[in-house]
Image (cartoon, rainbow, N blue to C red; front, side):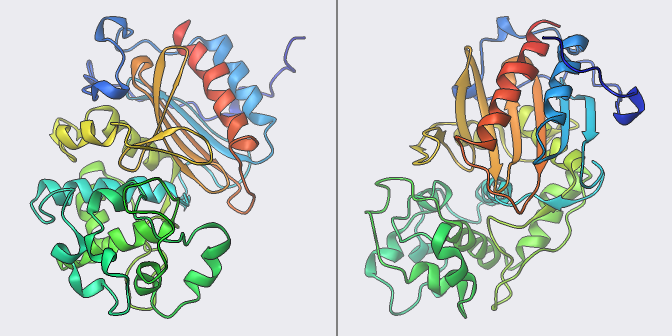
Length: 356
């Protein structure tokens, strides 16, 4: 059956800013398809298939906005419902990917000493006196991959955690349910601790770092967000960005960490971040430093994910960057709405690029 005809074109904002002649996708090998298989820079999408993709997106009542870009050019940006694409929205746990980027910049600047540096070495003052002695040995890498081993603060434990008087101490004072480095235990507390570490080693707030290290070079707006009782900005949740600004963040990663020819995160960190290091207990997808990693039809995909279906997808072999924002109050399971978004990407948007 043919899809229902779309309303008049003015319902969709089509942005056609000229892309650079060559954006040079300097992406790490773990997520990078063979260079010989990459399409020529400047090719867009198959318009008929793109229209079908947008038609399908319009049927997903949880989906608010969709931005699709290829080789650095936004080819479609539409708010089906909810705020317009230029307005900042809560990107939920996509914040973790942003904090992981800040950690990479801090490492590049020598503020952390390496991913194997421990809490005891970099921020001993954050460790509560009553904590298990193993807490001091938790590494930056284990925080980045959520393999700290501590009882999680996400899920059923989230409300009790944010109602505590000290979020860092509460996260680090929880019992171990696995050995550090044993497996991924999804926990916003791990990223909140990481954000507090970044604030301590830099002497600056996480918001200040985000604005200076990401906002300024990318030309994006970063407003303040939730802070804990000690004044630490929440690491790993509740950052606000517009879909178009999140697209710029994704494009920076698609260019190997560079923007306008200048490194924002180092190429080395971009490569290290997309090496699979653990696996999600929910989706089964691999996880690197702040990025989920998957594959479809021979194309490797890196993506950031937030509650409710806030998504940033990168498909480097096709030059695709896709942003989805959704109703932040509704759950989005891997076998539910997020699965539908994955099918939108792999069954509609990616074919539009393959057949351009």
